[in-house]
Each structure stands twice: as C-alpha cells, then as structure tokens.
Amino acid sequence: MPRSRFVPAVLTLGLALAPWLAAPVLGAHPEPEGVAPPEPPLITPDWEGLKRDTWYFIGYQAATVAVLYALPESQTNFDREDASLGKWRDNVTNPEWDKDDYFVNYVLHPYWGAAYYIRGRERGLSRWQSLGYSTLLSVIYEFGAEALFEPVSYQDLVITPLAGWLIGEYVFSPMRESIKAKEGELDFLDKTALVITDPLGTLNGLTDKLFGVQTQVALAPIGPMAPQRGAWAGGEGQRNPRRMAWGVRLQVRW
Image 1 (cartoon, rainbow, N blue to C red):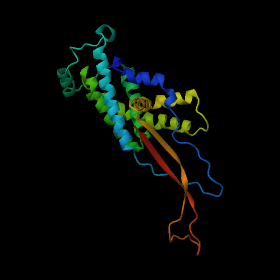
Image 2 (image 1 turned 30 degrees about the vertical axis):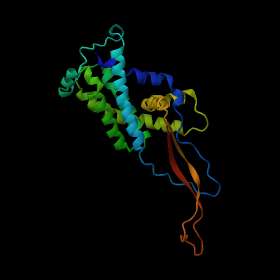
Image 3 (image 1 turned 90 degrees about the vertical axis):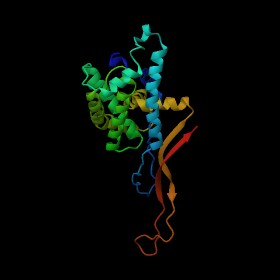
Image 4 (image 1 turned 180 degrees about the horizontal axis):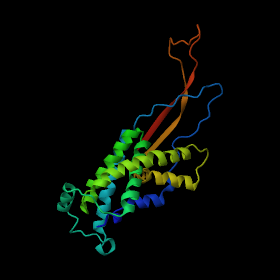
C-alpha cells in the first residue's frame, strides 16, 4: 500500500472538525498597582499528560489498521493478506532508503515531525527533550503500523524529527506564542492555526472528551504570599512586603 495513502484518517478528521478546541493556555493578567511583575514560573514537564499523548498516538495507529481491516477492500485498496505479522517482521528488520514522492518525504513528514515537537513543547519539555520526543514518535510510527505495509525508511527516521524540530521551533512556536499573546476571544483563523500547528493536541482533546477525561492548564496569580517568619528586608526593622506569586495548575477529571 503506498505510503501517501496511509495518512491516519482519524488525524485528518480531527484537523477538519476541531478548530474550536484550540484555546489560549496562557492569558494576560493585569498586575496590581505598586507590585513588580513576578518572575516567570518554572514549569516542569507534564509527564502524565505526555504518557497519555504517546499511548493515544499508538492507539490511533491501531484504530486505523482496524478500520482498514473492517472496510471492504474495494473501498480502501487495503490488501489484508499482504499486511501480516510476517510482513511486518520483514519490514522492520530490513530498513531501506525509500523512493516515495518528494511531497511525502520532504513536506508531510517534516510537518508531522513539527507536530510531534510542538506536542512535547506544549507538555513543558525543553527544546532538546521535544526533539527527543519527536524522534520517539517517528520511530513508533515507522516501526509500528506503517511497517505492515512497507519497510522502515532510513530518511524518514532522520528527516522527520530534524526538519520537524526546525519547523516546530522557528515557525510553529513563534506563531503559537503570537496567537496566545492576543487579548480577548480568538477568531476562527487563530484557532485554526493553533489546530494546524498542534493536530495531536487537538485530537487528544477530542479523545479525552470521548473517555471523560477533562484537562485544564492555567497560568495565573495565586494571590499574595505572606513573608516568611523571621525574614527581613534590607532595611532594619522592615519585613519583606507581601508579593504576588504565580503558579501552574493542572486539573484532570474522570
């Protein structure tokens, strides 16, 4: 089966139907008068959310194969006899330099590499960690369901994460930050841009709703913090003033 036809239908459906899921995560909050702007908080990676994203990604591949097996061959051109466990074993043990179309190798794969990268960044990973996560998802894709159809591709294992890192860091990330910095309600084009630059996040949001998982991430002031007992400012006899503190709150409900 040609690689270009193995674009997961579920991901495409998520892109088409869910631009309304994209909403700004970080909002602007005015500072009280006389209070200095707080330092940016240290955001730690959301490992639980990232683990859930990874399992969803694997599940989408399994669901796609299941759909291809269920639908008539006349509609999908899917050869059930050719896509077997033995075929998969041969494909993963004999990687090769594929001869796919230029558009598939150098447009679609870098785009999905950028999408994997952005998913890592949205979960709080650093640049290098997000590059590693993009590489991980690329390996899962190449050695996963796609290997039922054709051998693992050397260039896809390299081009997808590396080109995706460049696009994700220097195109998608600035675009998303610019949109999130806007005040007020986002328009349709802004929401669509957020979906296109993080399609897995959009699809995972739909999957969360399907399974009754509600996630909410907010960056907001959590109120003034009282000075520590015995802590004194530079001036003699003066305590530290009360200051605003910022925090990241992750809420998950089943």
